[in-house]
Amino acid sequence: MAGVDGNGVPEATGMEASSGSGPPRNNHCMPFEDCVAGIISAFQQPTLRFLREQMEKAGCPVLLRMIRAMNCTSTNRSGSYCSGKGITVCCDQMQIQDHINQLLIHELIHAYDDCVTKNIDWTDCAHHACSEIRANHLSGNCHYKRELLRGFMKIRGQEQECVKRRSLMSVRNNPYCSNSAAKDAVEAVWDICYNDTRPFDRAP
Image (cartoon, rainbow, N blue to C red; front, side, top):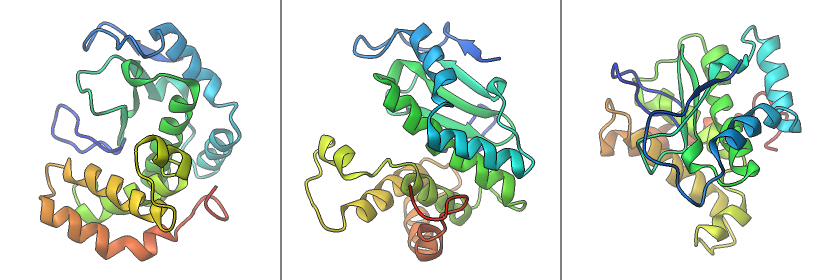
């Protein structure tokens, strides 16, 4: 998910651990120390290992110091990517290792786009929408099992509906994009960005 940092810059969203900030940990979520350990171990997961290798080949190595573990003030955000700053993982929203893995895959797609698309502008609604479409599609965020757990029961076409829904939600949070601009941007770039599976041969 792409958010906004303290300077108004859109976020596309050793280990730096900032456990002191944010609200108390959600009792249903893992202990902070387990979250930090989970972030480190996540890069043994095949998809994350592949993304890390591809980013290194593209000249953008993924270093652990680029990933910050913290307790966040927002209850509706599990993490984010900010260009030039890296990835934030909201440990107070992580319940199991799979949540960490999926978040990191999603945010690394944003980081990959930031690396290989030299003229990307996160204040441009279309650019942001494209990266959100790719991140939601390629990360597995919209796998039918996850959608069932969210209460979405449709079988045919649910994955694409999920990608559109979640991408639109993220772009609407961009202060440079109004609701209508976000919707127009997602629709405008949908075909080309949904079918852009780089660096994978096809969607995992």
